[in-house]
Image 1 (cartoon, helix red, strand yellow):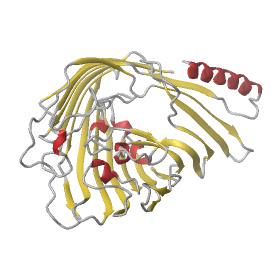
Image 2 (cartoon, helix red, strand yellow; image 1 turned 180 degrees about the horizontal axis):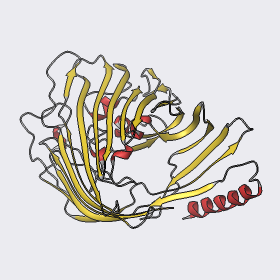
Image 3 (cartoon, rainbow, N blue to C red; image 1 turned 60 degrees about the vertical axis):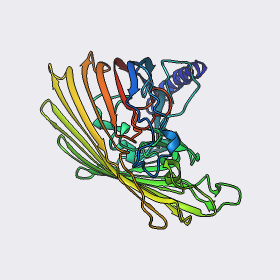
Image 4 (cartoon, rainbow, N blue to C red; image 1 turned 120 degrees about the vertical axis):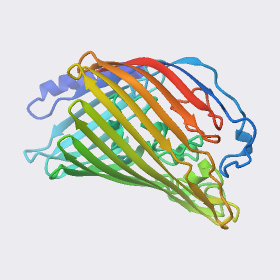
Length: 418
């Protein structure tokens, strides 16, 4: 893994440099997390034949009835390797800050893939501002809802942050890609500017804007579009209670086009606005931890084609109950979530169906904490899709999920922080 060798070399060099300039600079740190986990997964129960109440956004050709047989998989979750540090700029408390983080695909040999990376300025009174590629505020507020710290396959983003319909559970993008990922709200977004405020009486905010570097014609002869993403969250913490709200707006990403029923960026479709609203609650009472997430996604294309579907919206929620024992060394947890069918509309006001495209999802697990840096876990999960539902864990068992196919899996994993 050539990229790993180079990154280690850079980190060692910067450590020596930092030691030589300790009077001026803060330490530069090499860090990471490895998280291989093994699961045994399948899909079954795929709908055979086109239902009489087929939803408008799912094409008849999708009803293949195909199921994916049991298979064993090793995946790397959110394994990562990075370098971070800062430099003091005078005596006012102002610092230059940076981070470079790569995906650490511990289960296979892959190239260097950037994760959260930035360069910016931070001050204890005024907060931090930076440019780079980073998780959006919309994604960040829900990350701590998971009982397994490093993130994993069978977590909240199975239902939260995507509407099913082939949209990936999470994505890293620097601009619109004219693919399914454009409809995802669980994003690490490039070309971004972010501001993080300091804490004031328990409140703080984070603002983000991803610039319209992809401005231009989506297709030859089509209108000029200006894709951008803007989002924010506000968070209040008091003791062991945390209340959070986030909003995300995707301009000219044409998510409606990717989930079905409308073309994007054509002469009849000049702009789009997709929105997400998310509320998160985290509360710890003794050894019991309760987390909950509620979300509304709305996709809207400015479409003039009479037969086109120009809007879809749906709600979803996900709750987790974790109980710790043995002084916090062990935990058991259970989670349940539901994505509702939602509703859609056509430009000409004709009927539009979203019948049975929702899903239920649940998982249970056990965690053993060997130390503050090392944890092992066992798990079982199931995605119960309705007749035309296509929600899935990520990565999927084997390619696209056929409508109605349920996803089942179980396994074990370990994570090591360093």
